[in-house]
Image (cartoon, rainbow, N blue to C red; front, side):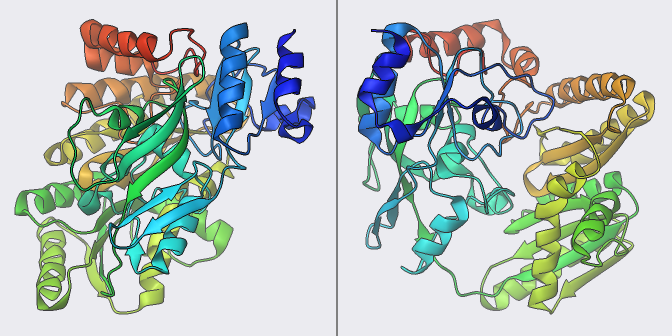
Length: 456
């Protein structure tokens, strides 16, 4: 039986799409600069058993599988390879259980991040990881890249919350990894291994994520305006040295704010050249003291202006603008997005190097960052249709990766390696560690069908 006949016999007809325009719409994530191949078919399974059948057939026929969530990734990790099955998890989108006593939720991978947050809030609980794409990105995709977000400076990233999962691996084996208990060290942490693996080890079909109690505290928002990204970086270093841990510390420059204003008319672009947006969610008098201390640190680092926002809508608008920066810039032309992370004390140095590369290569770089944990997202803006500018932008992109490694950092903090960062990852980890990663890949994916050509 041919591959297509076997798939047709195994799944209902409405699970398939082979119209070229439909398949093409699923063939890329948001990394516009990453290459993609031509998929043979799009499959949208409705449950684990259907995923298992797809994997079995693909393994038998040696057909690659590229799992994908909402396609909000920025590294090409979900891009099609030639002849592959694009496995969209969009129909597996249910919250299966919430245990308020044990504080966890069981979800399918197609559940949208913000939808989970809203669902568990009804139980007095909170799911902290909050990537900028949280209104659209799914939990499966978040797990695949170990997504972070605004809150991760204090509350951690996706790996800190995924405690268990179900996955389809190998030639179609369904396995359960991790646990639902508060503690457990039975064997290797294979659930943790899957988080950040970008679909290269198997297909995640269910996630168990731990939750926190929902706080009723109204956070304090502190804004500092600086004359340059480097000056704002010095404030980030000062906050880190002080031992204060805000619940958010985000950097956004005027270019980004102007792009958001042009799109959403929010009226924020005249607040300063570079803003640091700090948030403190500690309750009571301690929270008041931490907010005052954060503002003092901004002022001591040379803020041209600082203020504590007393208007909840204004404060939320500032953080909403930070989240909207990337899609706002995309409207202006192709954007090559970086995702480097360096020690917080070296954030000023890294920002200075980014500015120097922009000048040396004649490109414009807008800056946003999860500054509180050293995760920088310089956005290289290229005029549409300017091929020579694309070459200069790519040269800048690679130089920034090299600088992050030289400063003891990493080439990707949360977006993943995908296709765009493979050279940088090899340089960062070295041949021996790369060989270890390939050995793990080969052990769990002996046929080599899961998202081949990505990461390693």
